[in-house]
Image (cartoon, rainbow, N blue to C red):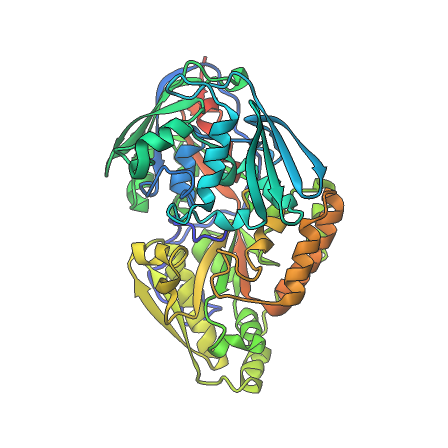
Length: 543
């Protein structure tokens, strides 16, 4: 997924006078975190709880799985709706609502469904429900951002009471892996028909198969889930009776809610508060595996950034280490490629080899200035969008503006509302007049190929309409390769092309973060929580 995360991080109160200064004037009050360990889970719960309150940084804009394309809706839905396959906290893929899948030939995927799975209304899941759920992504009236994941699908058919077959126009390994994310979500066909256009709203609700059922959505206030007593997976029976999600957009207010105990926990913590939360004695801050990297996505290849020399110069002018201190409280590393190291979980034994072989990002302002001059772009205007949606957006935007000035580019910042910023990633018309935007590209699966599909010609996530026939051919070859190790090798070619062309300029990557108040434990710590039923494992920290 190539969507701007709307997490809150560090407010940088002074504009960057130069890339190297990284919020000069704010250094005295800024606290950074230098020592941290990445683990996939927190200590297991000792006993059950009556209720848990969880703070989200924003209210979900929908609970329709077909439209869920960002952290808030997926964080809630992970506990309510399920997919044919499942991503684990260790970022592997295992059976979910399908007990197995078969590939009788390169263009056919057959899913054998789990028997005796019950929807929250008491009805039993069948192949008809799966067919209806998957087909919604192909309905233009639904407007699913996941439609491009089905680009190679010719037919979705019921081939038995508990069997569904996908027939493809060409081999598509990634489609199968995405059955562990929103594209593979299963909803009751009868409920979809009953709810109609209200489906996924506070009025229409949802009816899925997860360990929790939707109890109440009070718009502007909270979403409450209740334990589903007939959940099929006995290893994930909820330890807490209910989970209440509250929406706290202000990072300071969210931090105070965690410190006061008003909220028991939260993912994607404000980086400005990491040191305070860690030293408070009110709970624990944990860091988990992450597949995300903060990148600068080019939105316009017809302007100055259409010349790869200008894109490369801008990359060379970024002081990434200073940006990490200002935007992520020092928790992170410079990104070597558009897809983060954490996205390379497909072949764990070779992940380090694939990523460590990449050079460190170059920082050379003089060489960057020379490149801009060679491209005839000195004095040319580049418009980058910024917003109050998240403080790290303004931090990076100010850094880009300062870096641009150092190398001869006129980087103009256009401030838009939080809603308008989010629209950039779903509405092409919202990108008009913009050249650059900060994104947070993350994989839903352990396969780095998923990230690079969004640079393929015509893909929904290809915001700037980048097109390279060599890249497209390399992608199709990798996507037809069923062997994970071989596919990972082929994906390195895509990575090389992306680094050469820079349609997306890597900036930095940081681990996932979670705060667990003293009374709770058991939550997964990493980005897999977007689809894994993470709330089911939360319980009391004490017997």
